Image (cartoon, rainbow, N blue to C red):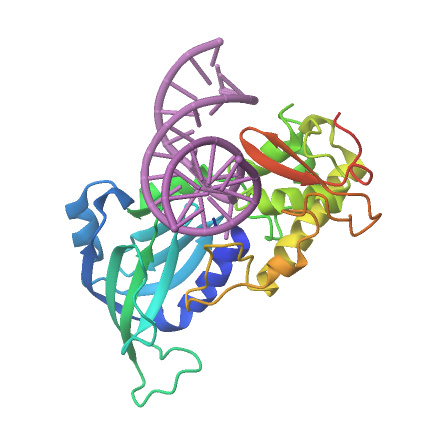
Amino acid sequence: MPELPEAETIVRGLASPLSGARITGVRILRPDLVDGPLPSFRQGLHRAGIEEVTRRGKNIVLRLDTGARLVVNLGMSGRLLWRPEPPGDPPPSHPGVILDVEGGNPAAGVPSSSPCSAGTLVYNDPRRFGRLRLLAPDAWARWSSTLGPEPLSSTFTAAALEESLQGTRSPLRSFLLDQRKVAGVGNIYASEACFLAGLHPRTPSNKVHGQGARRLHRGLRRVLREAVEGGGTTLRDYRTAQGWEGSHQHRLRVYGREGRPCPHCSAPIERIVFSNRSAYFCPRCQGTNP
DNA sequence: CGTGCCCCCTGTCAGC
DNA sequence: TGCTGACAGGGGGCAC
């Protein structure tokens, strides 16, 4: 489900309640969601302090005072929900892992008589494609190094992207979905970035050079920044840590818009399927199937 | 080694 | 109303 902008939005919503908090309880309702041995997962989290909430690609990362990191990948339907005490909303439908937390900052916008908050962090996932893993510092470093550059970082340049594109003949959409090439891009923003770059999603990656690579770099960063500003794209499952919908679904240019007019030229948007996934594009602005 | 395909699982919706 | 099939934002494993 979530791509970089959705993960970033969740991270921002968790920073206040979780930073400086302590995990006081670990409840594992769906053991298949935990990667690795259950006892070490449980013991590694219990009584640990949370120092920072960050992100790597599409993954939400809680850095603990033990040096370990809890890495949460939401798969297609995962949610990571902060439920302050006392809970205002009904409990979510498919809880998989619940962390009891004490001592963070009060939930933003929620009046509180005490300077600290207590609540639960619920990982909810009907389809159970998501995974939670607890990584020691060396394992974290190894895992992080398998992911490509962060597309919104200053080190992600058009020149670096162009060089990486030359390494494969596979379709541009496949390149963008490959987390080893660029971290955090999924199916929605891959289509959106190809559109902004004026490149057909099937274009062989190594045929994208020069101006094309610069347009792709610019379009990718633009759409990811816009989507972060909009709080992510809610098509069905995605919610923020507070359970709210994003708003970027109203700003999608081509994704999910088969038959609707292209925002540039009004030609009907087309949908094609390859690698078992849909890609949306404007046949006029993005050329024909190469 | 790189690449593409299948599958993991549940929920929803269109069409009959 | 109820059944069936298509489809869904991800990613690991495997065959080629």
